[in-house]
Amino acid sequence: MKQLSKNLLHNHPWSKYYPKKHPYRLKDAEMPIYHWLDQAAGQCPEKVSLIFHNGELNFRLFQQLSLRFASSLDDRGLQRGDRVILMLPNCPQLAIAFFWLIKNGYYFSSLKSTIYF
Image (tube, rainbow, N blue to C red):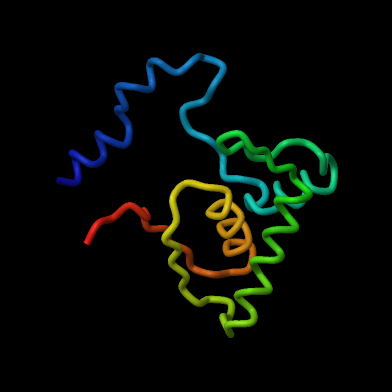
């Protein structure tokens, strides 16, 4: 079993289709993903960050909505390290909640909202 998993790690048949200029393995990120949102909101606040159906959301509004979501969780007594599950489709609200949750140390999971019981 160990040999099989070792071979899988080192022998990826799909990697031969990657362009030469793109490495198969990426380096660890130099900064967490939520820093990118903060940085973009500061440097280019009016640039479009998210497109959903016919609507667009710029970085400034994305960050503001994320902070608004934060205050609603604070009002409910959630604290860093708590686990949060969101049951939403792939929509702006999911992205907004995701960025704030990871920025503030919550354990986050998302459930597909079209699950039928």
